[in-house]
Image 1 (cartoon, rainbow, N blue to C red):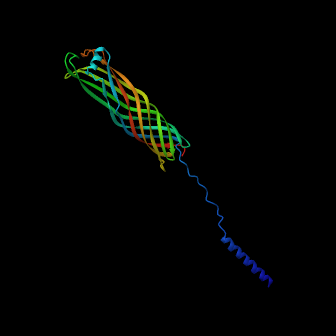
Image 2 (cartoon, rainbow, N blue to C red):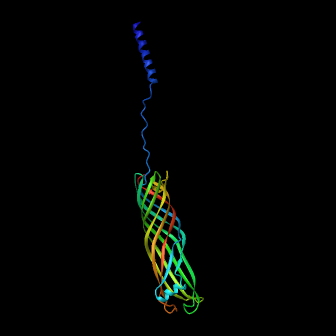
Image 3 (tube, one colour):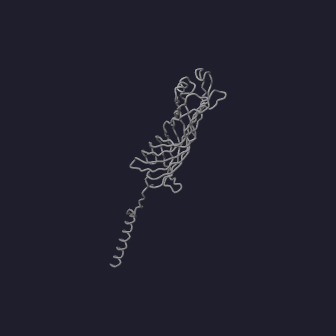
Length: 278
């Protein structure tokens, strides 16, 4: 009898322990921690851009070389000043590197772009009788052409996660062609004075923009794809063209000096493929 009582007590104790264990909270291991990558602007990038280029302050100032030519300009027989405004398409590519330190981003970028900036302007002037002995009209043609523009610039910006606002400035260069042709009295309009200049001119560029890194876009093996909008002012300086007398043309004096300004604004959009730190 005692033996049966002890077995019953042991069985009851086991059942009670099992019930209490079922009521206790679970002790399962927590899920492993997975760190979410934080976006950084640090890394190399390469991309392309396209936009609109314009200039409303390109001026040509003409002065006489000899006394007779100075008088001709003063009397209005040759234009002392003309505006040679330009506008057109621009498109090209860029490459650069950024380093992010906290919320600040510093970097360097080099770009080169085709620019459809060319303008030919003909100004008709009327010479008084004091010039050449009789009143007559003359054609005066000016041409300016910026075939491409390149820059090497520093960039400094402030990043808020995937948005970067930046300023930029540095060296600029471009393929510039300028020419001036002055004809004799119409209607014959024989070329009396001509001169031109072509080559690489240098100067500076400055501006700013906004860039945005698109989430989950990783094309062509890049760590990120970014879109940007940017505006740059460029100034390649002032260059003087000697518009010299054409021998045997009937022109007076030795010729003229025409000074061309080359500057403008580029407004463009671009895409970059960033490689490096995520």
